[in-house]
Length: 61
Image (tube, rainbow, N blue to C red; front, top):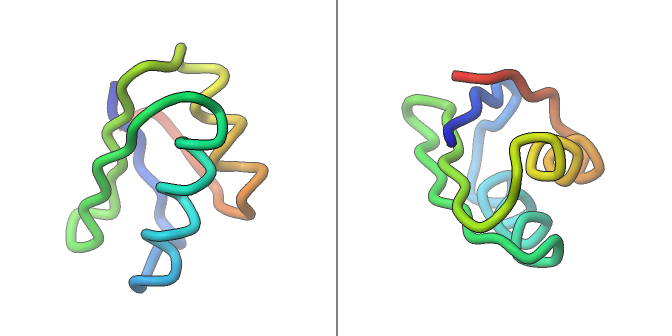
């Protein structure tokens, strides 16, 4: 599944989101230019919550 994360702007954001998804048990592929995060290994609710817990707004892409 893919999410839009509009306030993701830099390498730190990318690393923080990847770490949050990994901690929740999934894998994230972040595209900073498109402001999207593709997540494997988690259901949509858990993935979105992990991104929110990292401090970012998230919506389905």
